[in-house]
Length: 551
Image (cartoon, rainbow, N blue to C red; front, side):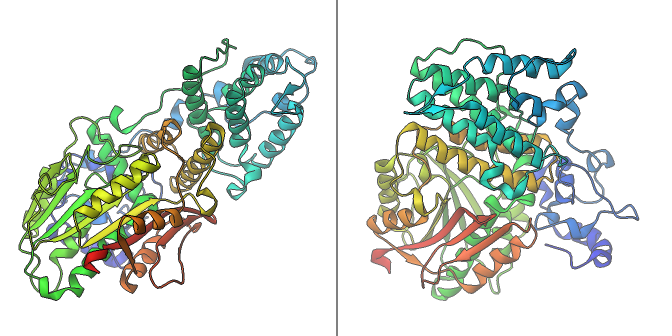
């Protein structure tokens, strides 16, 4: 529940804490408080020492009662920036001497400068390297990268430059040719580009350096499966990524909450989905006394549902006699963001919260998408939320998955997926083209995340970025465009529904809290998806569907 202004927020904060008991949901996790402030990695206070309520967004009412320990209230996750020493910080930006044509040093060279010069000596062993059917002068590529690097000088190591335009995205200008060289088995070119990537990659630099690190790791993994042997050139390999399954449940939960606070990547489709479900219930007043069954085929890991339950409990009149939430596990394709770490379980926290707001909630788990495993009950309102899970299989499996959803005859289906753009339908399935498309999608994520965290580095950011980078390692085809998903849903027996004005406005209101480069677009068609865009590029879409028989 957002506060109206600073002064009112300060006076109402204790009352707000007394009214809500959602701290049961987060239990022992007070360190996430800093995620609600202007600096997403440090704690911010007002001039009077209190919390700045204007900086608290929709999760502000998840804070604890005021009796909690101050040690927890003041805890801030350690910044990864502290690990960057002066000796290695110079590697965060491409160095001019690294890109200039090789020549003898004029004087003694020490430290990182010596390492970079020696790496260039090794990398430019081939003055020109044979590319795909043409002679490619690596010096020209390096000149372009040097120009880009100079344009970015003076900016924070954790921020993006030049608006994220292609001229500023030098990591892809190295990764994509490397993928093509691997496909062509051009060992000398692969060796050269990997050497350059090893020198430029940094898991804690700006979006380009991070993309270089994640891309280098993915290409190295792919290389190991091709049988191509690349001798060790002495460069630094990209460190292992931090992912959902490798962290403690507490950090995992904090990362989810913080990311939803600073980025609309998942919060936007979640908001649209919640508003649309509430709208569907309001329109069908004849079934007010009917139980609601929501099947969660998504990646929210419970974070989506507290706000929905709160809105459901506040509806005029009585809520549904029973709200069933079935979380689908292995029945849906696994991919980035879908797996939780061992030991993570949000059910007990969510059940306690539902009890505190007098809502009868039942939570189940299913590994098979079938009427028996879901324990479907005749007459209940069945809503299926498919959030960023349907696109993790090949084309045939995607169609089969949607058809299995259709067989359940749901009242409403919410489909949210990564939007690959108009040109992604029928994309070249070869490794270089698929890798380039995935690298572009990951760039959008890293670029927007850099802005979301204001260039700061912290464990929560690295968890989310490491999980997103798994996209490069998946064997699934690159993301399809929303038009292709429309064709798939229609072929599976669904009719698209239009979003209500309130749902669309709730999404727009949410975006006002985030970076100004985010925007939402809706096609003029009567029934069309709502899309989320970052810096003029589509990121994801959310669409509503009903079974053809029920229309």
